[in-house]
Length: 407
Image 1 (tube, helix red, strand yellow):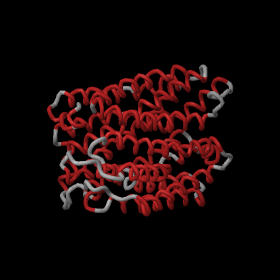
Image 2 (tube, rainbow, N blue to C red):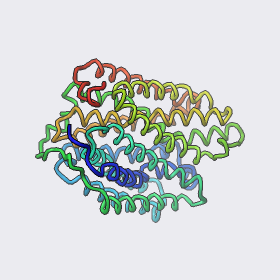
Image 3 (cartoon, rainbow, N blue to C red):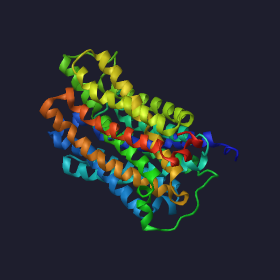
């Protein structure tokens, strides 16, 4: 067995910091939704649209990237670097000059396009450094992504910056990420074979039984994850208002959202990666989805109730909803043709994020009809479907190719 690559943990540290900064752009608008809603007089459709626009841009970006095999024929390092720069510029433009919803939607869509070049290539870079312990390594990367996605909530919760200042801070983090990629990020010694353009490879991840089942598990996970991230902050703030005030153990709504979504998610991603390499990919993902689906079904029942209970459920949900996230991508790197791992990862994320557009849009519609008590419950079928898919993968001989033979 080959020796682990020297310097791999240092490489993972710098790449994770870069991913944290670059992905801070994703929910920067969601973090300032209350202020935008007041200033631009937004309804439910406008509020949902600001998040869905990023998803739509990411989907189109990953689709084009997968069809062109871009992550496998272009340096993933350069792809990540320039995506972070362009995303920072687009987000900064929104912060400095935009005064209404329509141009904001265009800029958020374009920012999503850039995110397609910042996320899947980073996973491929990690895989070039780690053969053993890949689940933990990608789990740490996803933990950094989670903290980065939640960072605007922390900025909003701890400072008095206006919404434009919060967006500019996120752009600054993305520029810092680009500098870090330029100065410190390199591909590892276990690079994947060189690929040539092949349009058919964009769909190859869905033709093999093993990769297809891993993707189905991922799709169930994604149905739940991004709507939870998009609306948890609104839910926590509204729950305090329904109670007539208070705090989450001394934290306001945005700060509590960062703890549940960012710190809880980072803990879940790390623990999930470590346990998946020990227990197996399917065992970990099934357990995590069972717990997160239970949280989705029940957290609404605490709405307007004791803040400590709501906060505890939110933190546990934040941990479990991310614990499995990296393992679907890790499974694809282990089950797909080596020369087209980047394309397979990108195709997987493209379809998964397409599903999130529906579930993100539905949440405020359900809130408008039945209130927050049952809104998140409509996310629970996603992880239930994911558990079934991963159970079928566990029964397949292909599962022995994952995690050194640990199913």
